[in-house]
Amino acid sequence: MKIDDRALKDLLTESQDLQTDALRDTKASLADLRDVGRSRRGKPVDVDRVRAFNRGRRDLLRKGGLGIGGLSTMGLLGTGFGTALTAIVARPAMAQEDVDVQILQTAVSLELLAVATYGTALTLPFMSDNAVVKTFAETTMMQHDEHGKAFNAQATALGGEEQTEPNAKYSQVVQDATPTLTDAGKVVELAMALEQVATQTYVNNVGMMEDTKSKEVMASVMGVEAQHLAVLRAVDALIKGDAADLIALPPDLAALPEAAGSVAFPEPFEGTDNASPPEEGAVQ
Image 1 (cartoon, one colour):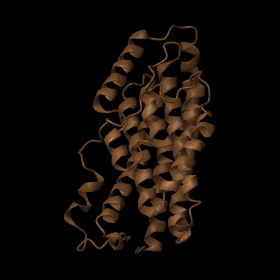
Image 2 (tube, rainbow, N blue to C red; image 1 turned 90 degrees about the vertical axis):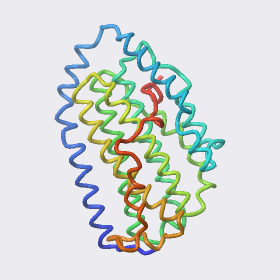
Image 3 (cartoon, rainbow, N blue to C red; image 1 turned 120 degrees about the vertical axis):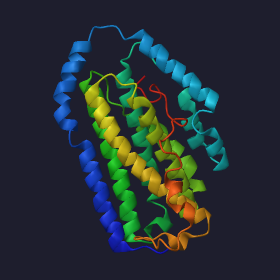
Image 4 (cartoon, rainbow, N blue to C red; image 1 turned 135 degrees about the horizontal axis):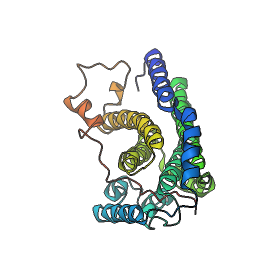
């Protein structure tokens, strides 16, 4: 696989700049969120909002939930990983918990899953073949960790609990998926599935949130996740097209197939078919 180390380092710098922009206002917004959380304490949860979220969950089930067809194609449907992802549509939103908090806790659960998965991938022998590629994976994992911490800070500021359970819950899931990671292509497929779920979840759920500050943070993080997903889609297409030698930075544009650009963004707007419902990762 042809890799331009210097250009990849530049891409890492750009990715970190986007990450910094995404999280810049998080700490500044926490004081305002605490005020919002205090104002909501003792007030009943809006039952109509909960009902609306549950209708959305049923719509996801009718569409096949978490991209079940895609999981089946990748051979992940019957694995612990696939089971954990598809199980998120099994229970309705909790009427006793603030929905914004549930959305944020679910976002944390996805970020923790991504951290665990990238962490496992980094232990595989073929991931150490190139130090810069390893650094790229480490940077992505670090960004997911920062996203999780930001969402947890938002959830607790609104009066909710930190979401920490997925650390233990998903460790076995990631271990179950590890035997399928026999080469870089399999790692890309798994990472792509995770990033798609995260991106589409944030696209779907950000519009459901009531608090403006939390919306801003989730929308900013959504941009970082979309960047991860676009890169993985392009790399996946080249690997499956037996054109891994074209994976280079900067790319040889004349040598790339016509679909190389559009495959990263198959639709003008990211869909929500794979979105996790707000309650998936809420603290029980």
